[in-house]
Each structure stands twice: as structure tokens, then as C-alpha cells.
Image (tube, rainbow, N blue to C red):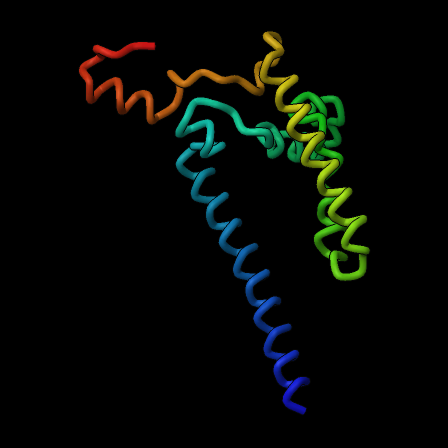
Length: 147
């Protein structure tokens, strides 16, 4: 009896946490969209993150532009796999789940590094002068310390 009650409370909390997480991410995405920041990592540091281009890739997919989606992020097609794994994580063997997630993470890192060093890639770049941290530092020092 008590065990069932505890399980119901636990399930409620897990569902509530998932709903709150999704709501929080949606609000954050809306705020970033409204203030036109885009990627917070790129905004702060001037260095694109491994996921940069993914939102534009999804938007391209919604417009049935597969070439555009792959251009913005070649791993856009891993999103349904990640969603499936997230939704069914209790039904999948932990070793298999962790192996697939590790492979996806490795793929993101490899693709990120390749895109970062490719001079013809305009989606992913590393230029700290574009970041707000550098700009603030530049202003505070009166432009004395320039990279």
C-alpha cells in the first residue's frame, strides 16, 4: 500500500519535472528568439557550440529543405533517434542506451571539430571578438588589450 503510494508520488514528480523542463526550455527559447541572441554560447564567447545550426536545420526540414537542413547541421536526423531514446529509456537495455548515446555524442564532437576547422563553413566559427565577453572586456580596458 505505502509502496504504491510512493510510486505514484514518484511518477507524478517525474512527469511534473519533465513538463517543467519542457516549459522552461520553451520559455528560454522564446526569450532568446525575442531578443535575437540565438545561440547563448556563441553570444557570450564568440565560439559556436556543437549544436549550432540545429534550430535552422529543423526549420529547414519543416520547409522540406533537406539540403538546407544538412547544410546547417549534418546530424539533424539524429534528433528523432534522441527523442525516441529519451521517451523509451526505461524500456531499452541500459548498456545499449548508453552505447547509442555515446556514439551520438562522439558524432557531434567529430562533426563539430570538422566544421570548426573548415574555412568554407559559415555556420560554425570561433571568433572570440564576436562574443559579448570580449566586447565588454575591450570596453572596460579602453581597447588596450586587443587580440
